[in-house]
Length: 428
Image (cartoon, rainbow, N blue to C red; front, top):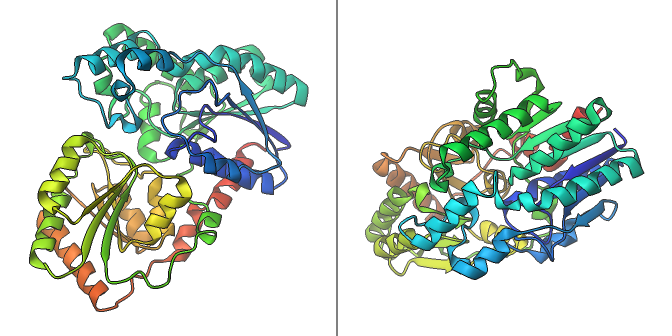
């Protein structure tokens, strides 16, 4: 393989889930003596959804990181309409009844196509060409979101042709993402998005996706038979993250259910809080706590308080290492899929690596992952009684000192070390 150039908008000190995948994969590629170059935006110019300075410590010292200037319209219109009206991760704060947010969404979708971070592209394209020539790099990987990053790879491919091996990594769907309908695209801007999406799928030399449904989404955008150039590399976990965290052996008598990340209205988690509220009412003497770590919409926050009362704790977004500490200090970890989405979210694998009991609201492929690892259970939103029964069983096991045991061997294929080797194999 020799050398590879990763083009990624999100890179430390950017925080959030989007940065984790290639931060970790590049580390293990570097462990294999691959010369890794990363092209990203200058943090002083970027418009990150979250910042986590602690992640910079996880960048392997052998990785060559190159940054460029960028034009970031989000930074300008956030000053005009207020930062709270700019969509956050997963569009958890979007309220199209708010005229400011509605205006922001319309501008975002119909002027900055495919997304507002496209202003980085002209700087990144120029620098990528320089790096490719300077270091004689053949393998180029572009990762998204933001999907505008894929247009950098498309332009490089159009110029360099067979001189480069272009690998596209889609961490999320493009026009099939669950919140796409909130973006208020006109027919014109939607058609442009579809054309971009199709061109990237057809021109890429290889495409990495996180699951079969994402693969099907992109294959549906072309009538060409391209199944052979797709590989599925799920999101994963870094064993080193869990080796470096110290958690007290005795966590006390508190039965803690924890959710980490973003929870928007589209997740529709109400059924879980109904069931947990029932559990709290049935066992008033039990020390039960629901801990929300991250961003949550106001509607859901109000619903939690209504059904759980004082048995709730809200923790704002924390550094990644601290998020893992919260996982490890929990009894049960809550996972929620947006309604209608058959996905396996990235944090699933860190939940599994924490070796805690996972309860997922939303069934599908996630069920087989949890079953394979003996890591918990997934429920449909209509199964309130079943969710309550499982919570009650978990509480009673906890109170009686019955440990929860997962299959650690089944987790290995989801480790970042294993997945980095899959990427290396695609580049040879």
